[in-house]
Length: 636
Image 1 (cartoon, rainbow, N blue to C red):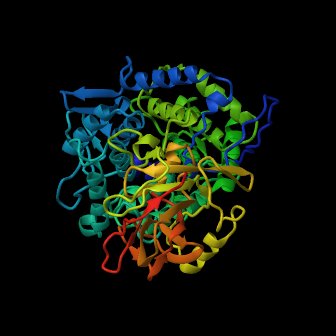
Image 2 (cartoon, one colour; image 1 turned 45 degrees about the vertical axis):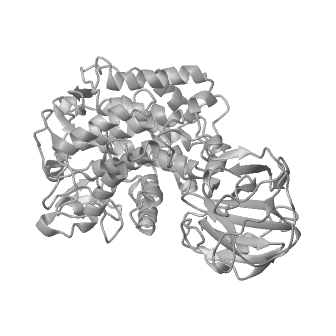
């Protein structure tokens, strides 16, 4: 990043074009990419295990690589006193927001709050501008004593800081000494206040919805393909809680569209910087069109988006196989770390040096690592060879003595995390720990239950979630919901009264009903799904309960709140429709007058959600709004 002005004035492009198609060898049975992402399924592939490595081997290898980066003889993590730490790009003798924010992401993924907090404290003290025109942003490079080498920002640092802080808030809460979500919101909100005054710009270009190279007058004119991680915006749209859900969903879509444009259609290589439309940057006769250090990250970022969302599945699969084919054609153990995007080798002026080492083309473990992560998207046989090559590769000096513990080391660690299924979406959790089903629900132990003190119904028979993909809740109009809710997913769904353990078939899937007592007045459907290891996003939940009355209860009203939209029926009659993108609020909607009849009454509901949490609360109230409690609930 600090060499970009020099690069813009000194790089020229080589002309010959070299084909990139590779022969595919005969190997074992090929890997099969998944067709749904973790935002929907809450599940992650472990490619190493799929290929025959044992779970113990994989866990040991992952921990070994982690320890090399943080505690080994070539570590890049250094503690300062008891409360702070930094990660150093040793070959460049500095501390970068890139590495610091990477360290925080790794720490939250490994549930290492101690490391996370120490890195954040150092970042906040020495790197973040607390006021002035750059307030909220970070100086991208510092000396190891905290002195800033640059006041300006590199936008990828803020990108990772925000996402890792959101994950920290979700994992550990915000009342353990650092309000992580507030810190993430501060960076976002400060960015939206930048308007070009003093040449300081927003992180995201307002015209294109694409991330800037640097949020200043110079770097906001173009972007860096390796800064594009649409999956991160999906995280922000759900859990930044900054009121900009639609904006972040647009940013994710724009990022995916941009990646289509910036990669070469034959080699799948991309330049390290480009115009917003994906075309190369030209300065006089110089064309910036070289794949090198920053560019290495693009395969891993696209693979992460595939692993988490699968939103752009078809194109991503094609991309993954093309880029692996290209590097395979150069020799899986001999391909070098810099090329022109057409596949030709760069000339001497186009080769970028690393740190104090002389310019050279090398076979780098960092690029091998990111190329191996593309195997998550690939169905061709050579994807296995890339994963095996990474597993067997040793992180050691090149023949010319070059050794990069920092960039190569971090990319290698991220790759082992991704390929082992340990680079995960971290949804909001409870008290810093993954909540178990028992935290929110218990099995029914008695035949009859009563409403709670406030009249809320806590005993329900709940169906495991039905797949209903929705990337946004904005489209939950009345007409959409009626189509979705009256569609027949299983036989007799409007009349069927399930029992605990009953099974219904929906397409090729068999889903089970669970009779449960909710431990809270609001029934946490998201926690039901995650506790059962089921899909949590883009789903429908059906809920049924039986209300037994000793006498008629006239002039009652059903009061419901839900996240997101829902519909409710009493004794087969549609009673309430809660449409739109909404959060769960007590008594958000109240029905017209109805009668709870003597004997058995069936209350049935369905809740739909795309991104975000899913829950509901329901009770009956009288005409004055007071809870009705003179009935029993029987789901056994």
